[in-house]
Length: 367
Image (spheres, rainbow, N blue to C red):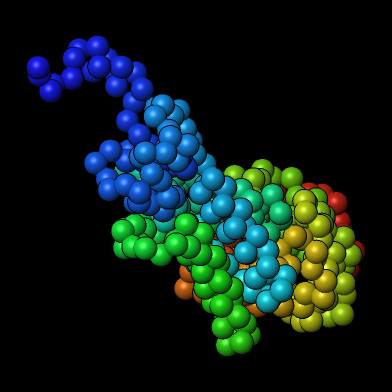
């Protein structure tokens, strides 16, 4: 009599399926029994039906969804703690938290490398969405973060994947959850170190130059007498940054207060120096435009220089104290934002100088 299973027995075995881990669905055939699942560590005994399952589970989402929610939620909550408990706006928030997001995904998700990379991108997008939803980042910062956090998320993914490989065959009974807690603990430790070693950022300066096809006196009038900003703003200002709408108050004498209204608030300036028609300098005495966590505006100036043939060079300078770090990372984006705003302001001055309104001419004649 043959020991080979009959065709009927083959069909019955196929219908029942291979023994699998109750927690993760790992196929347990060929493993010693009783033993622990080599993937998740759950004990099983092939002779005890209640410790295994034989159906093929439809549970693909369980391999990535819990880890994704843990990674994104933990990264955002960790950032909130770092910001409000430690006052950090530096490496721990913009590099440490994204690294933790990637590390948790790499450690907790068992999937092909391409799927892991895809999930890390989803995790990065979820982290940015969470920061924007909690108003810890604006639209422009969100675009910058899409570039800044990509590398730490991918590095964290690799570190988590290597950690899972090293612990997979170990007998460490808490390997399913303890490494995740240690990742968050390391993030908090980084935040504490950053808090203790943090030093105030220095004042930085951004200058933008432009040329106006008008004499220096007309260019000066285009700055001093404007009230409403009517020309269209560039797309960056429309979707992500504060842009000026109007101004009130005089700016012709030292000590004058000029209030500039923005779409997200206002800035009040005290004129500190006037040398018409060449120089107007000011201090920022009030700032409420939604970026108080990012920068503190200090002062600025407008300089006008005649360059011949009825042309005038205008030089707009803004000085500010940055609050985001590391500086090598955020400075390029800040310069893009400030230059864009400067270009918008200079364009407004140019339009008014090259096409002066009769009311402006009358006001100047009455001085």
